[in-house]
Length: 270
Ligand SMILES: [Zn+2]
Ligand SMILES: [Zn+2]
Image (cartoon, rainbow, N blue to C red; front, side, top):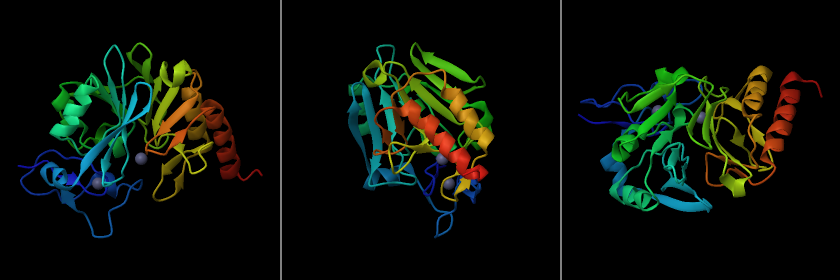
């Protein structure tokens, strides 16, 4: 029995004797099946040619990304906190070297994920660190490896510990979640967004999509809902899903003006 991993989205599946026939996450219109058709790998195979890079991004924040790039190539984020470190989003590769280096940074006390494209091998990580994996209940159908470590939360926000709150923003996925870190960015506040709020090429701006690879936009109402969901929180910086996806400063104003630009574009009112 093997926990197969889809090579296009990086999701690890429940164990099976043979590789699954389909990846529902890639067959969904928000993703795609790769050019060569559905293909799979496994953790032992991935460990042979890949390693995880762990870099400091700011005081008490580390990025964790796999090299060479694998699947969607997102990097996870580790918030260091006296109350226990929080792993935000996840990658498919986990190995002894990664566990050792993460433990040297204080380990992991909870894992939360923005949306199904970054579920990756999160169950494997939760088991390795013996912690709870927080996934929003609205995306329950996209969990490919069910496990008792998963806690499906149903509220619009959940404080994982004082000053670290996960917020259901919806949009890209019904349970699309962002994470607010009150003490981040010199106590100005930090928002970790995955691609629920997407940092774009011009890093003073963000965007919002139902499907990024297939360019399917969101409705004005859904974009407004995302803005409203983060409105009560103070933040100056946004970390998106990739190493360079960072709005360095004035991020809250960036979300507001980006939403206005987006809604104006899709409504055709310019
Ligand atoms: Zn897939
Ligand atoms: Zn996504």
